[in-house]
Length: 214
Image 1 (cartoon, rainbow, N blue to C red):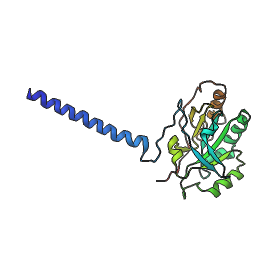
Image 2 (image 1 turned 180 degrees about the vertical axis):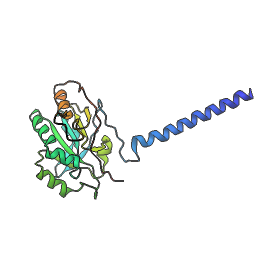
Image 3 (image 1 turned 30 degrees about the vertical axis):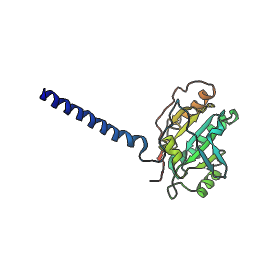
Image 4 (image 1 turned 90 degrees about the vertical axis):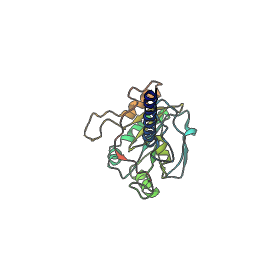
């Protein structure tokens, strides 16, 4: 009896220890100590936010319900972003769908002093690249963390009911050398606007890391 009790106690301690290890691992994976925990995922409601753009206009996601929205994480100092704006990937995609009521917001979650941050630089590059949609600043990084934005660019498509239908890369070409690259965002918009389930709803984003405040 004593032997059985001893092994039962050891087993209980082992399970408790495993639970503690699991908890210690799960915590940082979900929040990394950030103020806002990532809650955005395909098939779920897009987290609401309010941000001000480089022209001083305030954008609240909840006010856009009934419209299809694209969120693009942005950093004008990132070579991947520079390449896509020189190639007009985002601008051309927006222009293709703007007459269907699509709203596009580029979000810079870079902290003050980090690469690509600051009102003046972002205002300058919006003009230089002739960006026809809003470039909003999220210097606290709270919105970026809420969405789990990892790279610039990192893309999210939100349908008229406020549900995320696509999350991931802007296209299938991290190297910038594939003339036949798949534009994931354009495909997602076509299916979202048609009321269809997006075939390729999640892809791995690529680009520079988002320059969050520590």
